Image (cartoon, rainbow, N blue to C red; front, side, top):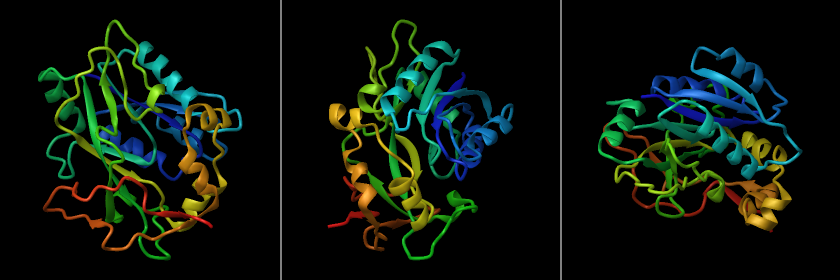
Length: 270
C-alpha cells in the first residue's frame, strides 16, 4: 500500500526536514509543492529527494496565500500520482496513529482500509509556547514542546486522509483542505492523531502570521476564508495559561476533553 502526503509549503525552513522525517518514519512518501519560497525551503526539499521526498513541484506565488489554488493543484496531483491513499498536510503538522508509536500511520491506514473505510479524521492538538522567552526554533519541537490544547471547532474537523477512487476526483478546495469530499465517502470511526506546532516562539508567531503572510482578497470576500487569520495581522501573542492547556503525559493518550473552538494564542488589538 502506497500512501503519499501532498505538502504545499512557502518559507517553511524551520519545519520541513522534521516534518518529512516523521512522515517517512510513519511509512508515508512526500510530494513537496513549493510555493516560490524565498528562504531555504526549496533547497531543503530537493536535498530530501530519495530520503522521504519522491517529487518536488513548483506552484507559482502570486503575492497572496491562495488556498483554493493550492487545493486544486493537490486534487490534480492525486489523480495523477499512482498511490493508494493521499494525505493533505502542512509542514507544521505531525501525523501519527497515536503518541506511543505502537503502530505506524501506514499500519493504521492498512487496518482502516481492510475494514472498508475510505477516509480518516484526525484529532488536532495544538502546541504553542506558554511562557515568555520560550523558543523551540532549531530544537526538536516534537520532543520538547509539552503543552497543548485540543482544537475542534466542529466535528470531523480534519478529514484529510483519503483512499484514491478510480472514478472521481476528490474535492479538497470546498473546505480549504480540511474535509475532503467525494461520492461514497465513508469516514472511519477511528480518528488518528495530528500534532500542530503552530508557532515555535512568540517572535515566530509574529513573523509567520502578522508579518509574513497576505491572504487572497478573493478568498476573503468570496469564500469567507481567512477572516480570523486576517485579524492576526493586528494581534498580540497571548500565552495560554496552565488551566487552559494540557501537558503531555507519556503514560496516557493526548487529552480530547475540553476541546477549544477558537485558538488560544492570539488576541486582537482593540
